[in-house]
Length: 112
Image (tube, rainbow, N blue to C red; front, top):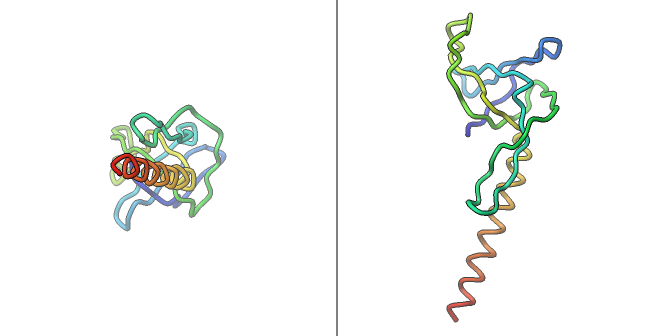
């Protein structure tokens, strides 16, 4: 997963551009927005089903990169295959850290 900032969004067309650094732009469709959830078994943050989310310029998004061969603009070689809000990803990352601390504390108590 990567992180990008919404550089431009066209709500009437439901697509936009993510800026990942000063030289890289990634295309995204609004229809590719997904929820994020924490899968307890492998302890991974995963994308789930689609949702309605209208990004605004400056929003941080988490996404998976895919090739974008049909681009009319040669500089845009990739698109965000699935994406979700960074704040949701951050929340689940904190939950992962809490679970890890709890697990290490429980294992330490078993050893005593």
